[in-house]
Length: 265
Image 1 (cartoon, rainbow, N blue to C red):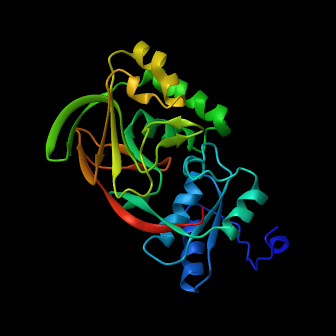
Image 2 (tube, rainbow, N blue to C red):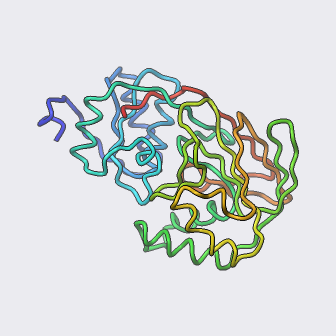
């Protein structure tokens, strides 16, 4: 496909988790003109993590369940269109986030979305794609118990019982669900979103707001721009980076790295 578009390209297929990062790092060290990640948010995260703070730009061919970053960058889901657009594009800089030493280019967080990510990505889960994700989310949400967090950001400490705490580099989870309306990839900030649950019924009834750009209407919703944040709890926290689950301790630190990644979009 790339050759038809006039590009000299090597195609390498990943074989395991973490392999995309190794491939991208090796390619960058050889001074390639660009690395194009063809896959879901996890694959894109691995490639972006390898290219961060360097001159080699990232191209994206979205092929995942949510495709949050690709949607935010308005990259076509048609592979030929996406590759063609990447070859024509001038690289632009975007911010990346970091939480506990792990980079993220789209969304990180703790709470119900981290638990959904953990169960959706489990080897035992046969359900893939958007509908599979919705099914897992519905199952988790029906049983999830919010926990209490101490959140330090912008010189303030808040003690909240929340269903989720999201740290957003872009506006959306993926699949059109916009958790942080107005968040920008290149403003030098992350957006902190906290949803304190009033009741489970209220949460479920107001979920459609995520798909209409009106998340602020969800009762208990709060959004603010930050450069860094500390999230603490009395129990070890599971967090996610771009949908990939990670086991953490009782204290998580996240920060922004402005203009740290070149992207072709």
